[in-house]
Image (cartoon, rainbow, N blue to C red; front, top):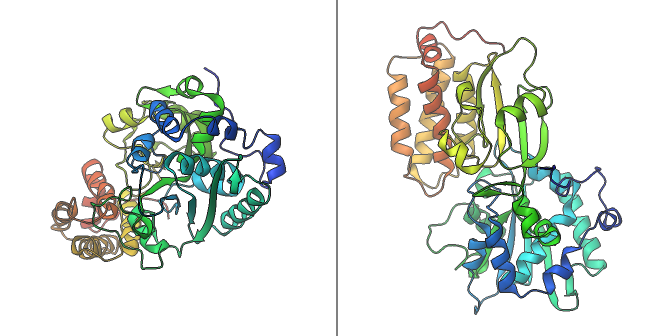
Amino acid sequence: MSEPMKTLLAPDRNPSLEKYLARGGYASYPELFKRTPKEIVELVIASGLRGRGGAAFPTGKKWSFIPEKSLRPKYVVCNADEGEPGTFKDREILEGNPHLLIEGMVAAGYSIGSHQGYIYIRGEFYAGYLRCLEAVNEARANGYLGKNIGGKFDFDIVVHRGAGAYICGEETALLDSLEGRRGQPRLKPPFPAVEGLYRGPTIVNNVETFTDVPVLLINGLEWYKSFGCPNSFGPKLFAISGNVLKPGVYELPLGTSLKELIFTRAGGLPKGRTLKAVIPGGSSTSLLTPDKIDIPINYDSVAKAGSALGSAGIIVIDDSNCMVMTAKILSEFYHHESCGKCTPCREGLSWIEKIYHRLESGEGQAKDVPLLLDLCDQIGGNTFCPLADGAIPIVRDTIENFPGEYEAHIAGNYCHHEA
């Protein structure tokens, strides 16, 4: 099977409408407008496209939840608040191929009967913000956005900068922030498809999810499903970082071997190092030990191995790393990013961070490991949103797979690792 077309990643770092059109940009519009909105939704359902942001919910199914008739306006919202440690593939699209995102959002708007879209972009992504803003203005000035697109549809986009809060990657917290309030998760139901932005029916999708739709329209269902495997179709962007020689973003079919990606595509580990663990889907997913990495990277295989594909942010960890320190760093991140709305997250993550500081400062106690596991039990499944649930795997997994390192810290010997 051939490699996917290089449609998601632009060939240069200075995108423009002229270059995008030369590469076949906005060619999906004729295919889009010759179909009815219902037919577009059915096509996306048939493609098997699953959300590329982490939850992997079927995209077409999500779109089908939007009511055909509504007393309130409908909205299309792009979640470009990419804050998951180890994940940076959406940033590449925002900076290198923003017109493809616009094209995908127009298709989404047409399919659900929405005339207004928002790109909620992480505040730190300033280069991406400027390029998206420029692309929106170019598209509007040339008839690809705004009034009477393709002679039959009105749709416009506002680019909105967030203020750098990880919690706003959660869709309902994002909507609160977009409305001008403090970004905190909402109680669900109602779900955004019923009552979302400004209480109107809303679809919220990840950047990469939207960019798959024009690719599907242009190349067709058969082409799209020729990549990947059952329940995991299409091309996919993988962000790989950590202890590899060639970190970066790779566009490959779903189902590509994780081992191949690490040791062939990304160049393998630094000389003299051995693999210790891999986090396959961003920092909130369970780590895989070396004996579990000879698997295809798709939703089912990674889940069967005991983790999740998540955002496809692959973090490679070699034997120069202390796993207690790794867990400490990520625990600090999740505690810092907690919005504080619910007690298990606010207080539980604070205690986990304190225990790791104690372990790393040479003051660890025998009760610390059982206490960490008890805190994970108290937190898991008891919060408004998945943030705290995402903080638990690194704690449990490092304790289960590397107990000797915790024992060394408690004994006051620490681990022999490089700074």
